[in-house]
Length: 297
Image (cartoon, rainbow, N blue to C red; front, side):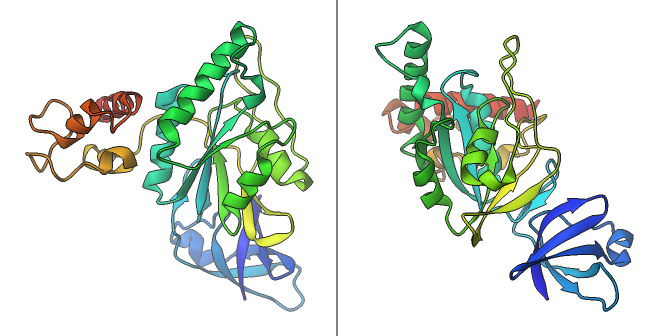
């Protein structure tokens, strides 16, 4: 019987197959081979007569997998940033986008707290409005962008349309409102939303383990609720592949004078030509350079 692991706690795995959820243990051979089942895995399970627990007998090949949090088979990343509290940091945002590109997933950029942006408002509201304008200017030509107000639910229906039929994970810096958005998408999860520390302007983590939830009772639309995808120690990309993880830069690669052009200081570089002509946003190019420097170090 085939199913999907929707939760794993204390050595037990909860597998959804059809309308039922089975509590399972993994075969001992997985431990011997140093293989651990992950939330999101598609598995084969065996029902054992007279036993409360079923048995995971096979883990099907994964589309992708992640270590922190330990989940697999993500179809789509909804990358969340806020217009303020905390203010967006473009280099950090681009790291999340590179992660999602490397995992070969679809990407949606969610801009949260849009209600705090007002060009004619107070100083903080004007700064938020400028952040919103800049984010849309940079990213709308590259990815689907959804403006959200997690508190009122504005924009949630459009996000639901974009993630329908997919396994979606939310990612973004702490405090940007992922938990509030998840509450809108899957209210039955009854998640705690973390308050923002006035001193650090960073959110407090509320999710203790990874779990998959159905959205609106649709078994084909699943949302990962995870305690991770909030920060990076290192960017997990090589010098050679980074250019291809920026779609706006990748569009102009392969035509430079040198085959191994990194688009930094090399002559006759098509990426830099596109930058000068305004075909690549200067913020994205600066972000690319910073990421490349970090990889080299």
